Amino acid sequence: MVDFDEPFAGTDALAAGSVTRYQLRHHFVKLHRNVYVAPGVEATALLRAKAAWLWAGGGGVLAGPSAAAVHGTRWLGASLPAEIVRPGKLHSTPGIIVRSVDDIESCVVDGMTVTTPARTAFDLARGADIDRCVEMVDALCNATGTKVHEIEVVVARHKGARHLTSIRKVLELVDGGAASPPETHTRLLIVRSGLPVPETQIEIYDGGRFVARADMGWKQWRVLVEYDGAQHWTDQVQRTIDIDRYALLSELGWTVVRVGADLLYRRPQVLVERVRRALRRAGALG
Image 1 (tube, helix red, strand yellow):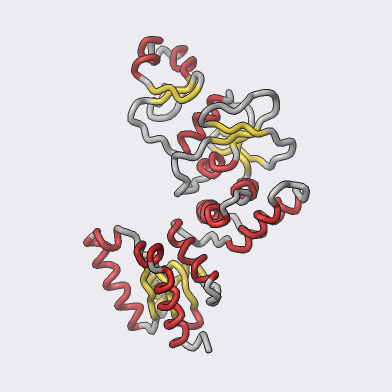
Image 2: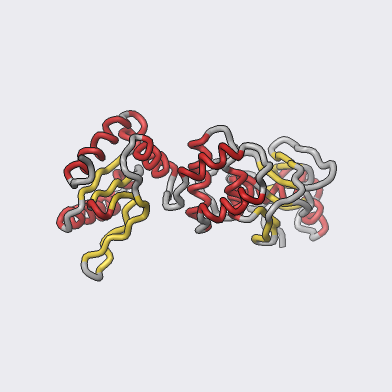
């Protein structure tokens, strides 16, 4: 059976009798040569990766954002082209970047050959925009549990690769605890402001009872920084949970600096000063 909500090879659908040539031509969206999907299906990074795999006929290795998507990375965006590495003379096509690499670390996920999580991080870290690279590698590490030292092993294996300086700068800033791009941006702002580096995903207990998992903070000073997305303000159930949660954290002696999009992106200096004051009151700063 052909799943029309996933990219599919037109020749396979025709051979299975699932569609006629007329239906294929007029009732489906052509993504690439011989690759189709039903109209209205969301064009995610994962869908683009699967379409590229079909386009290449199962030959080669999905890499970069495509490999990251297959590994479960979120926040990649649908506008990024798919990326595949394979030998031979297959050239790039609109929506797919084809690269030639002799030595690449790979594994198989859901029947597709992709770069390993550590190699994927290595490739994602080679971009010109350092913050965007950190954001993507954070998300990949969060999804896969990959550690920086594993990525550094790949770096050591490819000492002659381009952009190694950029990769090392990115790895110095990576923390797989970030659960969203704004959390990465918040952490980078704090670090670059000269404040102590925060720990991410801090679990807080009252005796043996789990109370909360905070985005980032400093256990020794009982200071937390929490990024609240839109749902924390618009969802009444979430709002009630947050009110009770922050009241309990306060009772347990924790100071919470809450961050929203306006504070982070329009008034970053105010955010930094609030964190600085909280740390100073806690005795972290002189």
